[in-house]
Structure formats: structure tokens, C-alpha cells
Length: 181
Image (cartoon, rainbow, N blue to C red; front, side, top):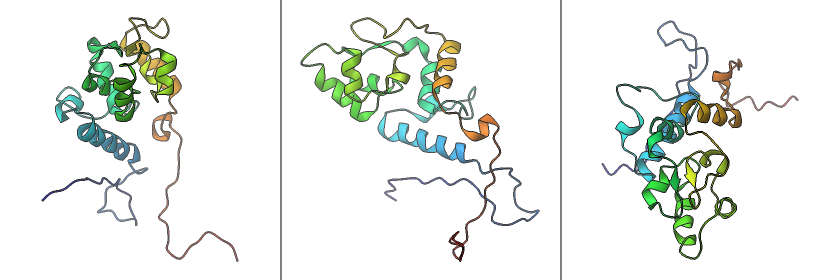
């Protein structure tokens, strides 16, 4: 079929009917996690069974799939950015496709430092737990699941449905422009 892209859409009820699933709010976080996982599968070299398996059948609601994978595979870290191959760099939270290519290119000239990584587009708030530059961590950090999760969650703006905020979703009308006349 030559499909190139998959689209996900959270179920949003358009009317009240007892035959429809009852949801307090649309599962928008799940939709977002599916897109994130799809991206990892298509561009980052991940396999589906690395992201979800029998012991982890659902996506983590607090962490994106890449961070969740990294924490579950903490033994693969820290990664030395001056020597790691491209596919290994792609597995580091905070390093994307473009940043990984820039790292590979830039380290041919000089040893990379954390300042250089920041200029290359690496999100150090996430990557600092998983990388070293010339054998050194950015800060003295623990390579422990709980420690990393606590610090990542402090930095992240937690999704509304995880925080417990209650939002009201409403079906938009084609004829209601929201302006008073």
C-alpha cells in the first residue's frame, strides 16, 4: 500500500449516547505518546518491542517513550559523545536526528564540551543524565532510576490529566465563531 504516515486521533464524543464509551476527558496524552513512539520507530531506529513489552504494555504517562526507554535501560548509559556512533547518540534523550548529525560532524574537528553541545542543539536538561564529554558528567548526578525520574519530572511541565487539573472539552461548531455581535 506504500503508506508513509500513520495518524492517530484521540476519541472525543460528539454527543451523549449510552452506547458510546464514557470518557471524562479525551485521551490526548495517549495520542501524543503514540506520535512520539511512531517518530522513534521511523527515525530513531527503535523497534516496537523496545518501547512496549509484556512487562510494560502501556506508555508511561509521566515520561516520553525515549526517556522511559533510557531509564529502563540505564545500563547503556552514560554515553561518551566524543566516541559514540550515530545510532547510539539517537538513543539519548535530548539528542535528536539533527543534533546527532551535528555531533558526528563537529567532533571531527575538536573534542566536544557541554557548551558546544548546547550550541549544537542538544537539550541538556534531558541529556545530562545520559552523556559524558571526555569522560566527565555535566554535574555530579546519580545514574539511578528514581533520581533521574524525579529530576526529569521537576523540569517537565506535567500533562493536565496527570496533574489532576480538570479541563472541559467541547465540540466546536462550524457556525460559532466565538465573537459576540
